[in-house]
Length: 406
Image 1 (cartoon, rainbow, N blue to C red):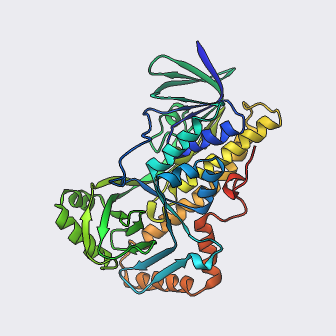
Image 2 (cartoon, rainbow, N blue to C red):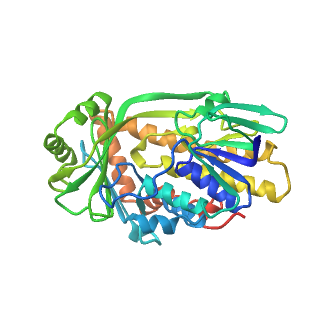
Image 3 (cartoon, rainbow, N blue to C red):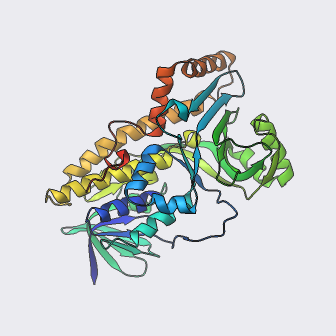
């Protein structure tokens, strides 16, 4: 028998689960498909190496769908300052929450914390059905909607399918949507480290020859690092003994947090600039990394994905409230216009920054350093960049402003 839903969301990570939460709270009959059961409980230590910096806009979304209390209970860490400096010159930037109306600039949260809290909410929503493990092996478009066939033989059907299944999206391929992009030939090396000096609830980022090194504060006093390196260097650093790695990390940090005392498991993932040429097709939409993948130097990837989730949910709920069919294309075209331009602008900015700090010509180093100092000493310009990074803009979805859309 075919199981019928109004919307099927494929991918139960942060973006997909947030989309399903918002839709179900808006009265949409939604199924969330995920290949693996998400972990809901774990020992207090160690901290997971997959950590995201969530903006105020993302916090608003997660609070409004009801996930934030579960996240706070499991552990989040506010960061109040951000310090960025150029290792090759004297350029620096300092963003302080004291210059805003908030007590923090954002929060550092383990990815598993956000996912677990969202799935906790989904368990309470009558309109939501979570199907796991679920692997989609075929997708067809017919007169009554999109039909999905799962590996176990189940057949699901919906007016709309939303793919939030990651950078290598299988659903995007099934829909025939092509991508544009290139490899950076860089890897992001991630780990959790203990440092001699306190992180002071500050996000630290130093631009080096191969890429930026970020120290992100965690609730237990440790730091999560994201170190952009050439793929070859990253491979070599993964192979180092712990003490040798800590010594290399301490040197790269410029000693800003003193000695590097301890490091947990290390991993590296390849970095890529990538975007889908289209965000939509008939009865189909892309969200999150399935639609776009950007350089992590500003930590905006998951925040952009959560804005996608909020936007598509708002438009679907509005369309249903107006008693218009979810099979229509008008609201999908609006979603694409709303999110694609914003995402491309953010992606291009990250790409330009990454390339600018990879240049070694002395005139260019002096120019970028002067630019950093100019921004740092201009209250108006710095406030603009600060607000944009925090997600405080007028064109955001209703959920990102902390208001319900149902």
